[in-house]
Length: 268
Image 1 (cartoon, one colour):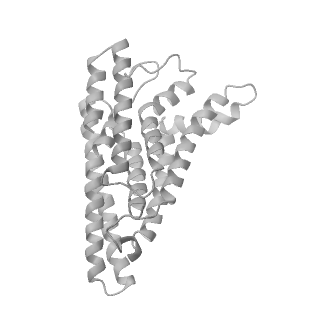
Image 2: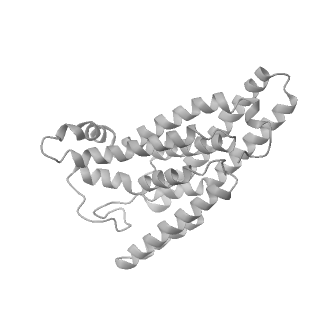
Image 3: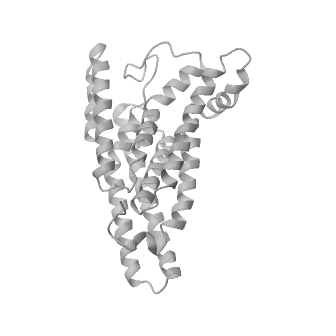
C-alpha cells in the first residue's frame, strides 16, 4: 500500500518521459511487493499459484477499463502514459484502495481464524461448530468490505476519481475469499476461480478487437452491449462478482468445517 501510494504520487508529480519511467518503476515495485506479501505475509496460502492472477486482476483494474472504453470507440491510439486523461486512461483509485486494504484483510483473516479456534474448543459437536462459525466468516467478510468501501471513497476523493464501489468491492471480495480458502488448506477452488475470472476479462477485450475483423462483428456485440448499459466497469464487475459469489458459497461450506481449523499450522 505504501509503495502504491508512492507510485501514484510519482505519477502526479511528473510528466512526459519521467512519468513513463515513474509508472514502470511503480508497477515493478508494487508487483514485487505484492508477490512477496502473498508468499510470506499473514495471508500466505499453501499454494503460490494465485499471485500471478492477483497481479493480472489488479492490472486490469488499473488499465482494463480505459482500454475497453477506447477499444469500443475504435482505439487505442497510443500507449498508456499513467494519466487518467490520456489516449489509454489509467484508473488509479481502485488499485490504491485494494493495495491499502491488505492490512484490513489480514486483520479480518486473523479475527476469523482466532474466533473459529475458540469455537472449536467450546463446541459440543460438528453441527454446533458449523452453525457458530458461519456468522464469524460472514462477519469478517462484511468487515473487510466495509473497510474497502471506506478506502475506495477516500482514494477516489484524494485522486479526484469517481469511487467505483461495484468493481472495487467485487474484486476485493474475490481476492479475500480466494486467500482465506488457501490459508485454511483449500487450495483448488481459489486458483481455479481466479483463473476463470482473469480469462473472462481477457476474452472480453479480445472479442472487441476480434469484432473489427471482416464478418466478425457479432463477436463484440455482447461486450459492447454490456459497456453501453453499465459502462466499462460492467465487465470486471460481472466477472469478479460471479467469481466472488461462487467462492463465498464454497467458503461457507468448507471453512465452517472443523477440519479447516484443526491445527494452527498451515499445510505446505
